Length: 227
Image 1 (cartoon, rainbow, N blue to C red):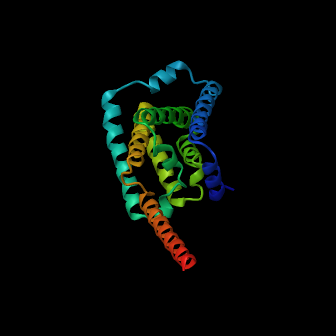
Image 2 (tube, rainbow, N blue to C red):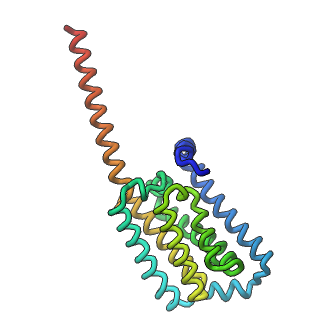
Image 3 (cartoon, helix red, strand yellow):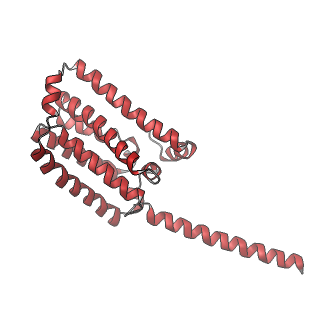
């Protein structure tokens, strides 16, 4: 069973470099599995070329409005829901809080391409829309103890899979996935509407109060010693 406390311990025990190495390693594994399963399911280059055809009207018409709607929905959740419901345990905060813009764009691109190739390009084409969408949601293991986040991940997965089913163009879910990750990463990077912002400020205020109280006690003790 997934343990949030163990996740926190692991997260606090690894360096930023190790965190990114694990993240990129996961994406390499996804790409490798996608390639191997594509061979097993006998998907040839012609099929991939057909799925990856760049049609600017279809890609732009669907990608930007849908990505905007998902981002807006996330912002509303961040605003109205309790912090504990929308907090992923600090992983996104740890990943994006100090990342450079170039690295953020690269990371969002790698994640969107590798995950959509596997879950939409391979799995959805071979095991079906619903199973592939559910597998994508369950892949976010840290959400298993966060029902709201798991539901949101499932809905987004169904949207991405549905658009791929509708347009038959894999670039549509890839671009949407990229835009969502990149924009939400920007918001965390520059502390815009961060779901952890309020909690972080409250913790800092409590720490300041404790420091002030500790300083006052220390001064009081020194006064007694001097007397």
